[in-house]
Length: 223
Image (cartoon, rainbow, N blue to C red; front, side, top):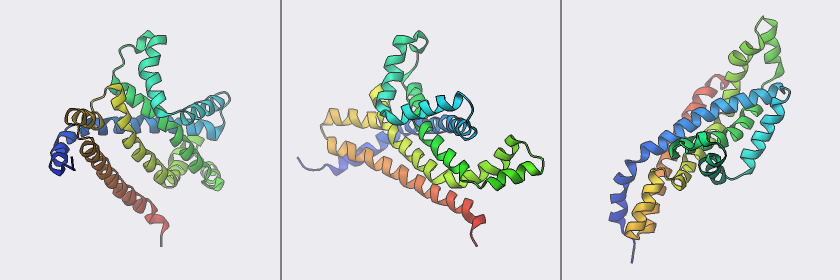
């Protein structure tokens, strides 16, 4: 049958119309995942009784099970047990699933970055009258951000690509549209190559942003 280059090009504008949905899932997923991850990391750093054990269980579960299974549990499984989730739409379920999944990975990166900061930084902060919270917010976390940024950005890039699983819940994003176009035209290679190129370009842009951010944060540490 041959490769239909013109058909692939014609798909790109169609896929780009659904790019907002993909980026929206990734943005909200990133925001919620960071909030959860920072909370988990602080719980583990300070080893809060009971909460530390629960956070370890959370991290173990969401790192130890596939994201697709977690999405199905959220969207199809929870409504069976808890009627309040019956009205949960597919987009929200995908955002929640992405947030919970990647928060487990990010929490460990943030925790490692925090404990990697020399203890003298904390001690010096407390010695000049700062509280634990002030020392963490003003001294420790800003330095930990520089250390954790590469891994956090890598997880965000992975999250962007993982939004493609949302089509299994019925979310109309770029992967879902590519699947529909391929099914109607039977030109699967062209359709999936087109969507692969869209994801690739997004990752290239994010990689450039990551490199710029790292350079800015490391500027004060280079001579």
